[in-house]
Length: 169
Image (cartoon, rainbow, N blue to C red; front, side):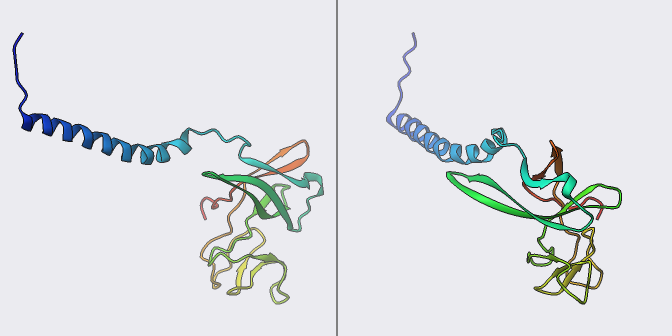
């Protein structure tokens, strides 16, 4: 056996490197876990929320539909209420539009301005949208209203938790 003696200086440098490595790992691991953990979690309730609307009751006139679900943010759980404007188009397809204006996030209402009938109107800055959610040129909104994805199960309308931008718009 060879006898290699460790000097005090080597011992201290090894100890400091070991303790420094442990401290670095202890500070990086929570950040790494925070970044990776949401990807690995499975959504318990699914991505679609049941509404109180039966698909047979939908007409070609946009109707305000409120739907509620439980949302968990870290260790805080809250009840969230979302709103959608839902109707059937000429082809019988269901359209579910977000009421959030793309200009500054105000809430749009259907047919609420007598000067602009049969349009969505944003009272904050007089933004206008057509029935299908496209923005009227020359008004503040820069893009169309977002749409909710939907499913029909047992005649009941289910909407996605979040609305997303319309592709190609």
